[in-house]
Image 1 (cartoon, rainbow, N blue to C red):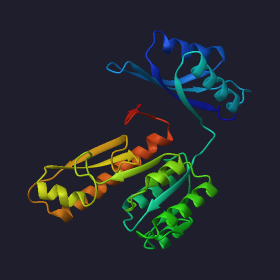
Image 2 (image 1 turned 180 degrees about the vertical axis):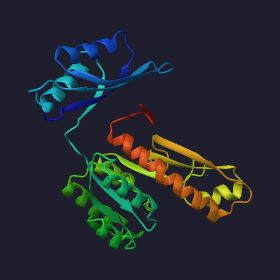
Image 3 (image 1 turned 45 degrees about the vertical axis):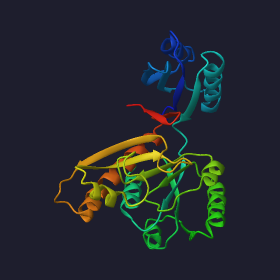
Image 4 (image 1 turned 90 degrees about the vertical axis):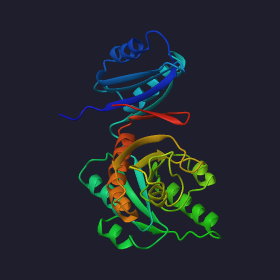
Length: 286
């Protein structure tokens, strides 16, 4: 037997009575089978959020079902919606610099089947990880970026992303700030890992900043990149305890483990369509 096609919808909009029942009823009327549903209400803002996943009836086109649901959400229940199907595997590019810990972790998880996507390119401003990427069978693209070549370098990167049909960029410790112009022209999600518990210690050398402040917790934050540096919607965070006995190198070492886990979890949630962005916040569904 062929595997049933599933659809996952993320919805949000003004809270209304009966929204859960109306969405479930629409799926029932089209002979769908709900696999999972979760919802959240922001009481202060009066906004309702929902994630719902269902199997479509045999013989129905996933594309037709997606169009019909988007029309229903827009015209009947007046909700913003995004929908994805289980057939499609998003095309992903990893941006890296010199540090390889997040890069290795993501690729190994992907090869183990943890991520429902296709990693089709590794993009870097350095050559240190070229041979490693090639050993994984991943195309490596080198774009040296300097202050006087940044505009041209980003234009070349954008051309590559468009040519490859990239739908998600993951900054796996890519140590260049993507310009607002780049993000606007790319127009698709970019996930970054920042090596601190934002909003504390934004910007460069956060472990040095943390050590200088004598913190007792260090953290890592995965967030969507926006025009404002390290201020995009947060997807996932975690922390580790440190003491006065830990030097900067100790913080860096402990931080690497946090960075890998936090970034991998954020990418996993994004690819499973569990992250709904509104304003500068996220709702991450179980």
